Length: 312
Image 1 (cartoon, one colour):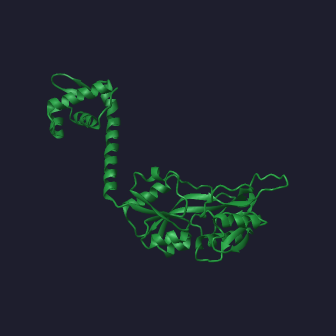
Image 2 (cartoon, helix red, strand yellow):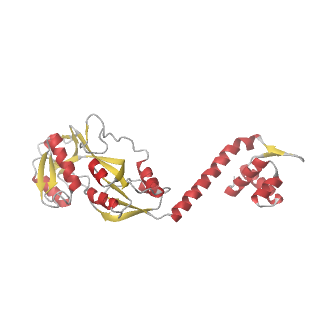
Image 3 (cartoon, rainbow, N blue to C red):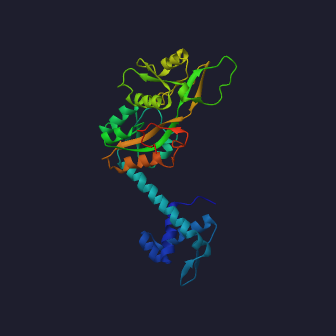
């Protein structure tokens, strides 16, 4: 079977509605003989008779009647796609900021929602939320607390969650590293500068208070990259990693294990300005949040801070 053109399907729909070549041709602004030839070509390409004809009338064949709903739906989807594409072409790009995590299928999710510009500046959660509030960004993927949402007049929807892990030195006594590590047996690092990482400090402080993990204050930069690994090597306890700082694969001699008792989660939200009513912005948020579900964050053995938006 050769390829079928969309315009031929439109011709079929017009004739199926009128059941008269002449009237359908008038509506389509083509000649009757041209339209009749296009129908014959379509029937040949599909290898099926679509109409029963005699000298006085025409009617849909059984095959034509069976195919009509599918053809109509296909043409409607094509029209919707053209409409969406037109809106994208006329719309301003939606500016998206993030901390370090984005859905792996970001492009596929948002392709039909709006033009998306991923901002090159990577910043902590509270900074990206503030950029949305002041209009520098349209949407940010970040962690945000209930109070910050109300104070900055922002909206938010859950789009992801990271389970927290702790990093420690490998055991040298032949013991197994499999399984999780209780949160109370870990250390959690806090920045001495409480402004530079306000989101992580607030989260980590609550984690320490609720689980018994030991809070350890470190100089700026001590939570990230090589400085974090140095803290791990010096610590007698496994050290909880910050989800805002995704590190490279661990070097030899270090292992990463999930927190248990409880399982601690860091949530990621799509955040937008509460007074931003643009269709493209809401479409991007809807696309990011589609099909996300609960992610296990409210299971009986899960932990979220009390001011997390999604804690039940």
